[in-house]
Length: 265
Image (cartoon, rainbow, N blue to C red; front, side, top):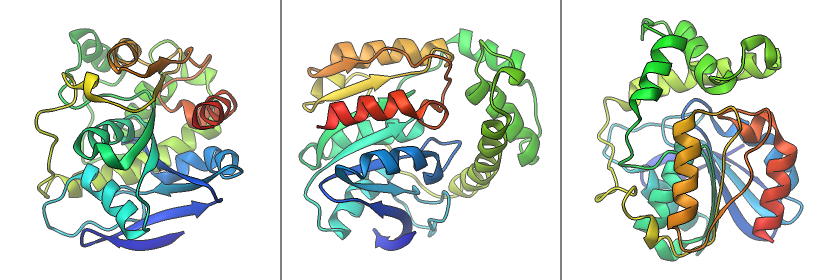
């Protein structure tokens, strides 16, 4: 792990391999550790940078306004990299899309897994599903909240907890507890949003875009993946990853790694 100053904050990142740069952006319920299998696979051909977004993992959170998409470009600036491919899962995918729209000359390609998009709204179906699977939890109880979020996102709506590797659940809950603490701290900081948001600007993405989800992720995200691939001029919708939910790169790394190596070659 290395730390580097980016826009006034010290961000933690892993740096492995040589070649064209690839930046890995983690889910909002996780941190850079979710990419451990991708770092090993991609670093055989690329320089791979797995970063903790500001406030998450081992990155700092100064009390100054910032935007995650500006931090991504700030990381490239700090490392002297003119462009990079961005790979994002969940919230990291949203940040990747915002970065490509805000700084189009700095992004060479996008790979998105289970990615929401700024400006998109969850359906009533998903909100009702959250109520049925998670219900009301005390937001101050990080352990209980993480257990509920992992039930919803990592197990997914179509599986039972006993269908999923218990070590995956344990690791996801541990990462999510740290992420919940980060989100609580982030709520006190002004975070810049892309304006206008990305949902109606997908046609402006002028780079190759690979989009995927797990078969057991929520239906909203599978539909959104279809839309991104259809509206991005160079969008490609990969087949859903079998027996995987929201953290497909962590849960089923083999098909994800193969798709990324083919896409980024």
